[in-house]
Length: 388
Ligand SMILES: *Cc1c(COP(=O)(O)O)cnc(C)c1O
Image 1 (cartoon, rainbow, N blue to C red):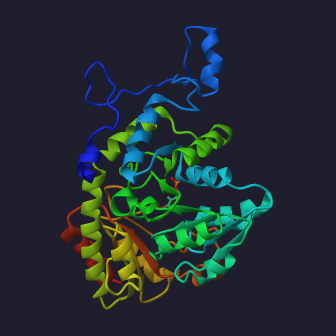
Image 2: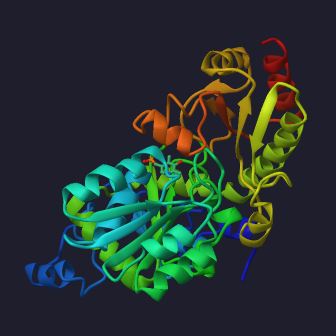
Image 3: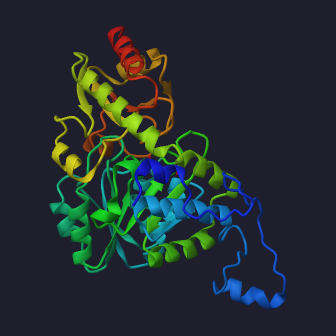
């Protein structure tokens, strides 16, 4: 098997007869048939013909093959956003009367899906502790169809023991779905640890250039086929042009993520020594309570860290306002460093009480490190902190 950089650059299914080094874009909404008799076979998936781009498209199929190879999966499906990947995948495996167990530290909208949306359709959900999986163990029951986790979690950088969560889910016949966005497929391979479906906001590290919104799900042929059928119905398919951009972004995924791992580590170490910083959350630091788990289940610690400063929300706002290189923006995984205040931005839909319980104090600053020079980033943060 080839390495991650080689896999980033090379296509999985070169099929272009004209010798184009870069794959073509099939910018079409629909596909024609030479004869009416061929339509039923294609509609029933009994021929290799494409029918309609909401169902499938050759550009998308090529991106999906590349993604599957990255995750060590049989198949992958792409979506018009990470949330489309998450909601479509969860809805593929539950019906009224079923039960879902999810960890409490989730991306804001995923939390809303679990806490508010699924219960509206008669799917009961239990939110459990992220770190101590004994709560998960006792929450899983016979009607549990899906165990849903996020690791590392946003924005606390808490980890879920993926291997253990998979065992807990499988013991009761449930599936383990994991949002692995923060790690990217470069730093973590959840399918090898027992997860059934790995989800990503491809908006982040997979595309990597802050210019596309997309999502991905990878897993066995059977699971992805079920998810793709649901994608046809819910309609969150990825546009072929966006799929082509994601494929281009993926070519440098290994390079980018390695640079981000190094920059984040350097910045985390520096911040943890700063007197105005109360706490730094980064799985690569020895001070992270789950550092040994990080060493076991991740091959790199990612480009996101968060830190709590001495003071209140206004003090945190003053720090981010003084940054020159880093911009204040939601999202992560692009080449430029971004900062956000999770208390007011990504978790605005979660109650203040739930946020404090989830380890999101008002003075928390999340940093999504880019590929700038580490020294410049360290200097930018040092200056912003010292002038408060
Ligand atoms: C951004 C993000 C999502 C949602 O993805 P979109 O592409 O914005 O829909 C889900 N999970 C995590 C961890 C994220 O960072």
